[in-house]
Image 1: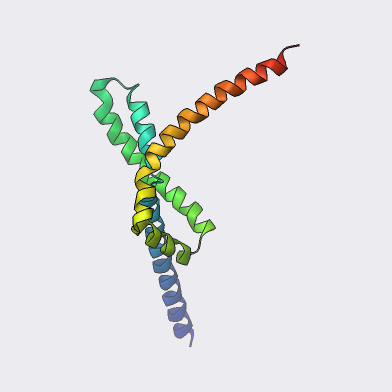
Image 2: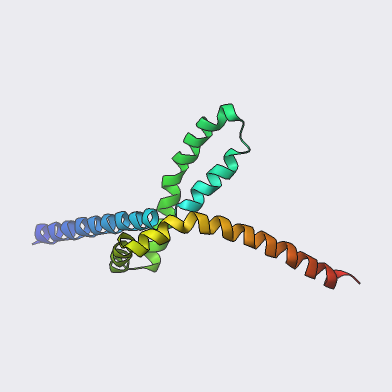
Length: 134
């Protein structure tokens, strides 16, 4: 009886671990499909401009080597927020034409939004200065 309980517990744990691995794999797929990885590539390009040309290739390799651990952390956040079924529905969406369009335009929208935010910040700074003056 004891062996039966231990065996059942082992299979339960193994099944749970495999299900979690499938869930995480699906979350990582959503991160890639959705364009959520695009800001990291934009950051890489911006940083690269400050790296001497002769060192850029090495920097790029080291930068890319840090991404899997970042994506793992992002995956944990998704897994705390969404169910596996939610993630499967996201995959279906990002496989659709509109989902692909959203994902492919994420980088450009982020870049344009960043410029708009900087312009807004400059305008806001002028307004703030008006109220800070005594």
